Image 1: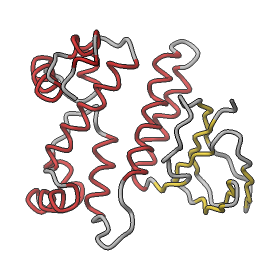
Image 2 (image 1 turned 90 degrees about the vertical axis):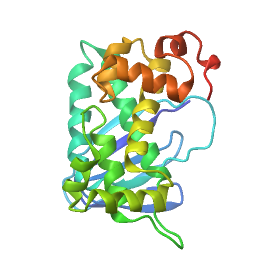
Image 3 (image 1 turned 30 degrees about the vertical axis):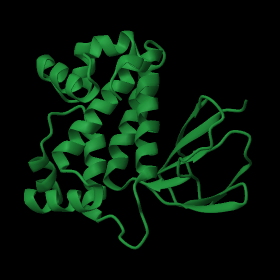
Length: 228
């Protein structure tokens, strides 16, 4: 099975994947499936970062072939470079960072971009900030201030477009990331809590149990016993 490829672009060009052509803009992230012909059209000397990966199973992909990252690109590029630096001595940590980039891309692919009620730009930007800052003790007030909107207005927008408050979304994303790390890594529970921005281990254990019905350690031993 041929590997897929994750790309981080810093230039203007276009790419034809199969029968579809996509515009490449600086600050974009793209995916090229394995066993698919990809043909680039460059305007000038162009250098980008890429990583090969192998998805599990034969499920159809819902990953967007091309997504603009906006202000999140710098953080994604830094994460990419950090993974490259880690790989020679700590390949597992490098793989975690790369799969995290893919996870973020998958989530962005699922955000509604068009339709009768397109998602508000502040909500789209806030979710990107949340993904970028999951490891930090960020608050919704921090995000609202960064977006130059009030906390209450951002809350109303989240309720309208996502059906939940910003804090509920933030906690949900942190716990989903923790679930992924428990399933797919041997990282200690305390370190996972820090990785998802919850630096109080007791608070992390309580939040995880409220969400999944078991403690993080119990979930790692037997994920099928959780309430999800």
